[in-house]
Length: 327
Image 1: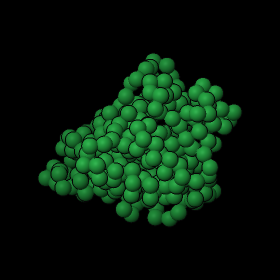
Image 2: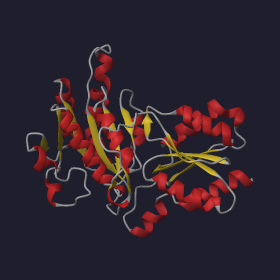
Image 3: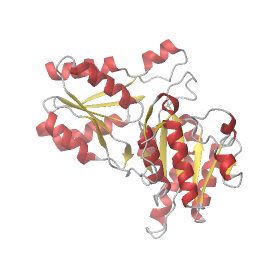
Image 4: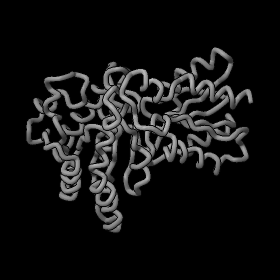
């Protein structure tokens, strides 16, 4: 299999979907201009290949972009729109939460409203107005599906599944992974089903569930713990809605310990839902209380030193696992 960056894998998925279905089109702020910017950006080269009819630069209005997606899906198209940075999803939330998420329910399940929203996440020295992880907000809206890939193969496979899903799907892309993570990517229409987690690393002493860029933090922690004789199993959730609880429960019942890790703030973060779900289903098998590792409840700071303090680290994970395993 060819090795690609995460950004290249996303671009491959977009091109494949547009080749397969003429109803698929792209829209977003400046997505056509990436042809001249960086070959690892997901829309690089697509304007040149598919033309301005199907790769549409939009005004700087996230509400309008989301409204375009809802209207296009109602007319039988398959829009794939981009919200440039995660905090800007708040400006699109009326269309996504009050319309896209509810239209299929309001149709009595008779109609499909396929639309995909791509949104960049991550902490990358852009300040708090460009870095704020809001996946728990989206997961809380019934009718929205949420995917969050951690590697190139899943970035391609999950995006393809999202585009051809009958429901609205938000695909959260950890922006630093566009160029920092490379991996083998299956060729062709290699979809990764929504709601199917993967075991990123097997272990027997504790289970850690996470997603996106935090998967690589967890794997680094697992490597460090292995040198101490502690075996950490890492579950890459891949999608938050639908959530593969079966995979998480099977791991927890094997290890007896559970940790949730994410880059979002701790209070009401998705880790709280994971811990509550595990506690309800696996209470008798747990040998210690579930644990959350998350960012502090402050806006994302700007300077690199402050960002390093803010972002959960492998050292925080190793310390938490040691406390759970050794008491």
